[in-house]
Length: 543
Ligand code: G16
Image (cartoon, rainbow, N blue to C red; front, side, top):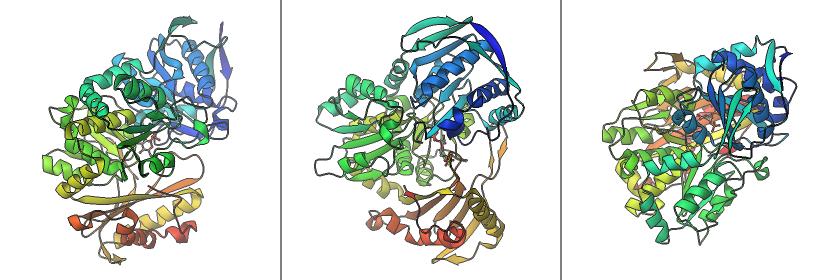
């Protein structure tokens, strides 16, 4: 076993996006690519000497190889110990939990989340800080700076480490502890939810279907929903993680989780359906014959979280990302809770959670979570829903009707234009930015613009400022359009257009969202010039 220093040169484009560095797998497999980035992580966090780290990933193609490289580099740079999930698997929330309960110096999560996996698809690496959350911008900026200056990296030359056996071993003086990826996470869930009540619900004939989408939550959902809570075997489907996620997109939305949608809209549909993504932090909730948007799910959880033991004392406050619908704000106002609006990216919730200002937060991109970890958590959201249903004994569709009649309904949809040429997407945004001051008072598709601005966030805890976080146009009466370029894509640019309108008349609360939003949708094209700049007349994905 020998520690060697390998000469390298900086590689262009290693700038972490919304959630870590995501690239085509082949790019990550290129000479020195992963190694340069990992060495830059060490530099960005002040070195790993003497530190303990957590390491795991979502099991996608190259996860196993990357884990071997990261272990050998951690050993070469003097890390004290790395705690690794068995077979290098850890869901993102489970990794966050391990970082916290073992009081480590942070951790590395290998995942490109909901992006597809495989040699021709996507891979990703992100660093989470000792609070268990994604590295904030000052850390990712330091990492990026280090990628531009790296001239060498240190690595230990050795045989592969057998990550399939639980237990401890040593690598060049560094301890490696291989842990069951599920056990600590399942124990945490048991402290938050009334497992007896959920068991009772499932024993009463309530049927659930959880689609793990061939991704990392399979083993977690099997252990918790089937083994601990007594859901019949087979309630968890697509439960074995595969390197290419069964050839699909492990993205829990009505398009990519169509199999689940079909099952939930069939004549013999189960009572409750849910899905999670590649690394287990996103969730989709579907009732029999009804899809619950992530924004609505967040609002329902905020309104009812006190029914679960972990939240019985009430919430400290709530937060949502800016493009997420304002359904949450209505609940917060009714309950007298502070409601924060942050930029897209879970990392922006970290300070609010750490400071005890909020205990529940979420995003339109299918992420919901609480202060139990510092990541969004797919299975947690499913368990909170089940706990609430176990208490209320109400069908999901009825719960939504009651919720909307109490708080009003925020119709919501996101339209994604994928793989747009980067220049064209940037021109659209620049052009719109230049016209913002002229928009107030103008009428588009019958809607009068009230305000138009570009969102910037001043973190109320550490005072840091994040600019250029999306363009928002608000209309009289409560409708809103947000334009934003995605920070997680790997090909060209993805333009996201977030559309929202409010409805207070109970007689009009059961319309199709696209239909209810038709005026907002045409105003979005008129204002943004989407067709004019991109040549696209239809989005690729509507969620
Ligand atoms: C990541 C972030 C989320 C963000 C989402 C979408 O999710 O953790 O906070 O909402 O990306 O980002 P964008 O709109 O920039 O593509 P995940 O599940 O991919 O890690």
